[in-house]
Image (cartoon, rainbow, N blue to C red; front, side, top):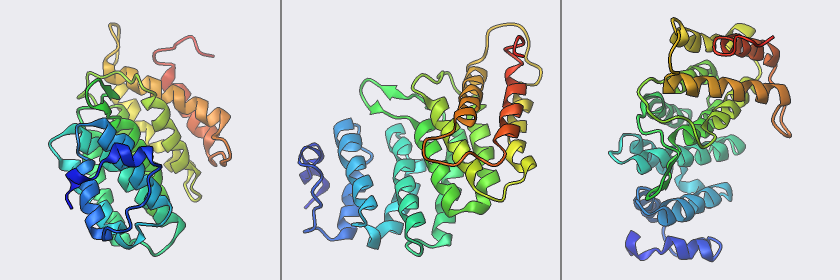
Length: 272
């Protein structure tokens, strides 16, 4: 059987029945092919949705590391749809691993983190949507992975916050956040901040990256990266003020919100 013989849209229409007749290792190979497809029906609605469900249900526990290894390798793929969907698979694997300790090794998770951290702040194609490829959403998908890494690699929390800061201030973009990327980043930051043990300095220190990037700004049109940064800071302030449903408010929410507000006074000088 080849990947071309799996009709992923039809599988989705049938409610994602698990193909138990296939060896799990073979299914990993099938998913790897489908998850780089330029057809959003195959990649997004089919293979990605199927993988997320099967991982959540524990059907792929025996091959979780291989599945995430394959996804991490796609962070260097030449095509954007392959890179942009890789963090969703890694995130699903990490979420499953956080709920069932021992499923994946720390060494494997660190390997995935290294590949992710090299890719996330440097990705140049940050479009949310493409009329041909469908959803790409590298920023939003990467944000989901940030939150998942924080649960499995808690010692990476400050590194993950720094990654978010570098992502939102990345200058190499002409795409203004238009598909709620700012909100997904803000949600990820709040979830990283929820982990116990961060000091107030660690919880706010990552915003120094934004402060440094914004230093020296003056009159004239707002650069795209600065717009993205301000949009993310606004979303973060809202998330910290209102919280996330059914989740704890971060220990240093007030301090982080105050620091974000300081940065927002740069464009919004009239704020109280």
